[in-house]
Length: 438
Image 1 (cartoon, rainbow, N blue to C red):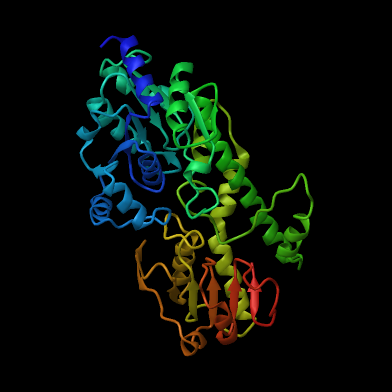
Image 2 (cartoon, one colour; image 1 turned 90 degrees about the horizontal axis):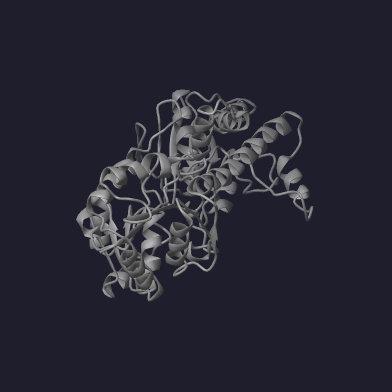
């Protein structure tokens, strides 16, 4: 089929909502995206190499908080969604959305091997005339410099045999107010036509679609969003440390500053940041800038400050114990919450894990309790969530609130704990004789 006929066929399928979509990677980004398209009547093939995830889908059991098992059952029952580990299942796809991990390696170096491996498979199996969109967060230039050549090696000509775009994922796990279909979608293609095609595809499920001039601009949008958060979190962490030395309540200051109706956005201190995005995405931009001879001081400083927070929390716990004539070495510490975010079953880069390991290195006897993580086998840890009773809580020298899950009996903790170190402002400045806050 000639290039013009391929394009006309793709447009017809998009306009009639008769296209088939493949989503590569069924994690926190790809899984909700796939089911949202399936909900709109689009046939979706999900490709996932993790056997555990495929087994969960086969058992009609969701493994992420943003998708209920009932939603998965509905998508499977209507026949619009299927999942497999076989890339050959994308051969009929009119649009392929790539949502695979992009970790860091070594000394904060980008690792795009998951992207390249996925794209190699896509280029091997994709049909001519298809649209390909990369959603995986990466450094500016990846789509054009790394992805396009893989297709060109397969003799795919852009604008004739396929269309390539970048659209940054914006999933916020656990955010009920902004599920995937309510979050505006930014799209930048390698050509204006590619951008328009992708806008039409995403427009099936998302009301507001925002075009930008290039894939490189779209790649940078995501990095700007997360760099903004990284730097502001790093700033408030540093101000929190400074305020403690000056005997100023940083939480009170933030609350008061938040009354200003313009020019201020509240950020809050904590034991560190976790998840897939904020700890690493800005470092992609920091790394790429170096190739242009530019050193981004803000990004590196903020990252260093945030990475220091678990050790700072442990120092504050040690100081609080010493004020009560108790040494950290040998002290019994209960860490409340080990996920990186409230009410989310996700341990990726959770600062709680670093806090626990730091406490253990300094000789503390550490237990943890988390209502959604029954056991912990990670980074050398092998622990079970403690079953808390009033008597059990009284055994600990300090209760450290690292993650502020809902449904925890904080009143019981307050009543029975000897000392609470609160990194999340659960107790909001009250009970100063028992509660120390970050």
